[in-house]
Amino acid sequence: MSSPKTLYDKIIDRHRILSLGGTEGAGERLLLYIDRTVLNEYTSPQAFSGLRDAGRKLWRPAASLGVVDHVNSTAPVHGEGTVDDGARRQIEYLIENGRDFGIEIFDVLDPRQGIEHVVMPELGLVLPGMVIAAGDSHSTTYGAFGVVGFGIGTSDIEHLLASQTLVYRRLKTMRVTIDGDLAPGVTAKDVIMEVIRRIGADGAAGHAVEFAGKAIDAMGVEARMTICNMAVECGARVALTAPDDKVTDYIAACPRAPSPTMLDRARDIWQALRSDAGARFDAELFVAAGDVPPMVSWGTSPDQALAITDRVPDPADLPAERREDANRAITYMGLAPRMALQDIAIDRAFIGSCTNARLSDIRDAARILRGRKVAPGVRAMISPGSSTVRREAEQEGLDRIFRDAGFEWRQSGCSLCLAMNDDMLAPGERCASSTNRNFEGRQGIGGRTHLMSPAMVAAAAVTGKLADVRAFAVQEPL
Image (cartoon, rainbow, N blue to C red; front, side, top):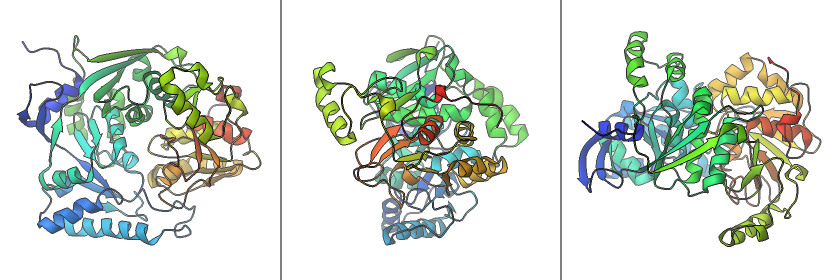
């Protein structure tokens, strides 16, 4: 009788072509079959150039999708933004590569264009049990469907396109159990920020992290995507949750979902994709959902975060190994030790990114914004995660809520998440942001980023300071 297995190991075993050395288990080198990939204009050019130079074709062109998302302008009206020559050439080369290698490409004006990690799931291309590798670290997002998803480098993209395989080293496993019920005002973003705060920016390094527990089961698929997306910020190479009826129902509503007959056949198979009772994990973390507060980051790493009701830490009170980083972060962020987080004034507010720009995120923020106005002196903007999300939000009238409040209702793209386009902070500007990283210069040279949920961004936008969303009376429904 075989030993109990984790969900991660089950999926890896089903995709293993052959072992390349080492004992079976963590650290084993193997040749792994990859089901699908998604390509963007920023990380794929060198891979295609390598294929051209070697005269190689793609093994399975239909297993790839290309989207423009990183360098495009998200100006409210197409064509009004600024795209520099380098960015324009990257976009043109992706389109050229799609034509020459037989890959479907969603250009800027395609009605399905959007951020890759939003587009893939909403099309129905992410199915439980798959392995998906792509040239972006936040490919962990797909784990919300019971998928092993991970980011790869340019040379690996070339190898994957040519062979549909990768040389892969099996990871250790970690289970994070979020048990109980979340308190009002607390979201999936707060949960993953609390996990990162507890274990640190490298606490899950070398691990595939499975999220489980009552709170995870209660979340919708889009909330689980937020969890898996940001797990990379604590070092996880893979993050996943066991698929359930919510996942199957989500897929069934997608335009490229398997047929109803195939979905009926798949449902039982997908729901069997879970860790066996008694499966051994290399590490475990337990979090009481009711103890998680609304979170904000104060520093320049996602693990430098606290409850919104807390204060900027005094480095002198921290363990010796953390003091230097804390001092540097406080200086860069222009803060003072023991300063109340709710006293920190902002210049900008941004809702977007592959972490928090889906329709449920937009609804969450709209509930706070309805009937309210952005504070004087704050520039607020939202970039929906895809053109499809943008249209769906407009059909619900959510765009009017944002516009009436004073937000810029922009096109889809990575936008202010990483400032590779014309959306960026000026030096010294402070932004309440629903994105995933607050590194120095991430949103623009000298820019200062505070991470939080979309609802918390909305609260900060109307307050002009970091704010506790629980202080806002919210009427349902929209």
